[in-house]
Image 1 (cartoon, rainbow, N blue to C red):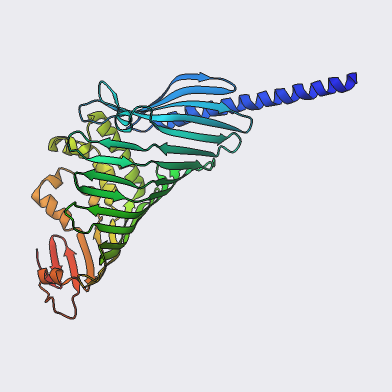
Image 2 (cartoon, rainbow, N blue to C red):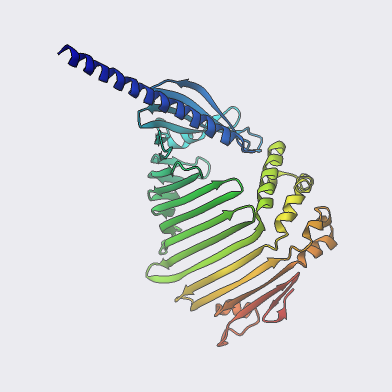
Length: 426
């Protein structure tokens, strides 16, 4: 009996020690990952990231992650604040908190102004202590807000986003979400946004990166408040694929609308697919990185700078800019389809345009400020687009009879010269 008690006590002590050791490991791993994440964010040229009020324990931790972004609009920076609480277990760590966006000087809570008292964007997540895999759910609360100046009212019904990380050495994050239908009104005018579904995959880091995005909106209804039937667009889909490696940047975009109608009248449907490729990858990364650093120093977005300031910044990044273009970038209209029974339209199109990158690294930003330099740059452009069975009005504007059996347009670009069906228009 005495030996059994001693054995049982030993098992409990060893088990408790193992559990405490496991929890201590969980706590330390969480701290290491948080420190790594904040350091990674802080390396970005346009984000200043810190962790404040950290209280770390074996079984639980609290703290606050702050990210400051320069807005350049003279009203002060924008800060994203993430207060969190973490619970450390043997197998996983859980974390809860909310998202605050503070803007201006003195700062004000942007979300609190819109969401109302007692509401916040909340997050709830867990991390596997061994694999590093994680899942985080972001919950968007419902709110009813009206702009005091325009009178526009938003009746938002909430939504949810789930971000998952596989824990692998190559970072890969998957995002899935859904926004509940909501309305935007202004007087008698009303826009009803149906269910919005989001899906994204983000893989890699820096100049070896892949991003896939998909957005699906089941319906979009626009009522102008005049008593006319509202316009309803259904099954609106967007997808984007971005690939960046040291060799090349490639981007493919697809957009489609299954149906647009008003009352019982079907008005239109269509889809378009456009790609951009042959941008030198390493130079793209260098250009973006250097430009972000210069804009951070300037404290303003590029479009808010004076023309002289813009030119000065471009001169500092002209090496990666022109190297980026040296591989003869190409924009391709993969396909265009537009159909309307109401207007007798059933059009298709495709084509491409190329910027000749031969010896383009010999150019300078100063040369592009001159008329000869601009002409020399335009002379590098060439392209050909074909549009078949174009609408009668479009055919007439291009000099083709609306009654012609063959309403096809061929658009040719050669420098600053543009021809339609062989006839110069510029």
